Length: 182
Image (cartoon, rainbow, N blue to C red; front, top):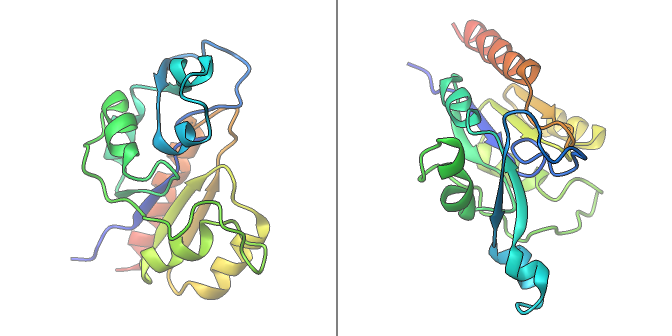
């Protein structure tokens, strides 16, 4: 039996469509959270810090993600807080693996997105789908040149979050690579 491909999942953009102008996105619920990295940049006495970060999440996304033929992994600056703050609101288990970034938002010498190199190290040659809102053409080219297994880089618009067509793309890609592995 072969391993399932990895699904490397970002929070802000794919799960939390933070750029949406519509306060009541269909099916989404709004939560106020206090993630450590976000709080670190605020005066704890400020109104914003007291209210917390607005996070919009769709409660059905967890079941949809779990139904996909992937091994889920958090690939987000939320790191372990994704398990404690995000997962309960969307129905994901609170013990998913987490990519621990060596440095958040680090500048890359070649201009790659700060997640790209550590993400490839985490994948360790396994097929993966990366779902994020910040993937660039440069990241795509670099991963194609440096990762030996199939990789799907799925850019999600941070105004819309994950949509039906994104779930369909993930399902189709996983079927293609599992068919190719036979």
